[in-house]
Length: 270
Image (cartoon, rainbow, N blue to C red; front, side):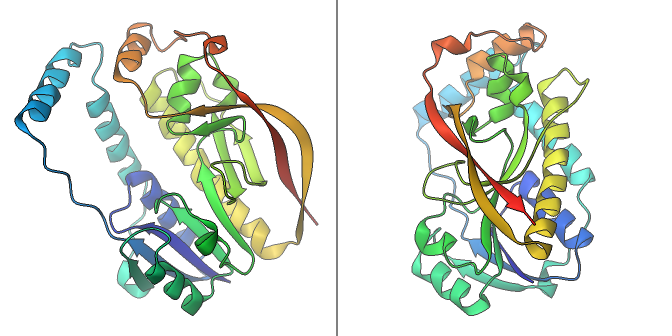
């Protein structure tokens, strides 16, 4: 199988973990990389820099330091990521996700499976170019939990039964494609960093298992009906502070947040 990772020039630690684990666990496939150029850090004015310093002082109080927690998480992921010689694989480069260079490279390599691995939001002009499937690994139970930082929001809103990982097909909306494989996280961990680490490790296994299913079996999609679907954005520093001070127990009622009903589409393999 030709498998292409659609990723960033500088992928994050979770993407590196998934990429390396998949290649090491399934070396029989032909892998390539389509890398979107990393954007330079925007220049900030004095006021923005002062706000950043104030934020560090305000939250570095022994009860909360989200930045340090994320750095610790990245370090622990790196320790579990096997080394990978990127030079051994074909690479293509794009200026931005879904651009002309992306389309040209994908038409050249003709991937059977295209994996969104940190490139950004894929559009139909790119996710339609795989011959078998284009997939995404979402660290949440989709489409019930969609968007960013699913583990954090599930902890805030007492939705721990929705913490897990989902590998799904890409479609035109976020985290709503047909589910390839999905598992809930069973853990005795209590802190955000520990729970998120376990969820990311669960996700790498789900991705590898999903690729195995897509390579070796035929599949068809079916709809199981409507489910409550919550869409969350970036984590809120103030809420994280409250969460940690509350020993990572829920601090908000989900009824305060609106939701839409979405059909649950899954793949059947045979």
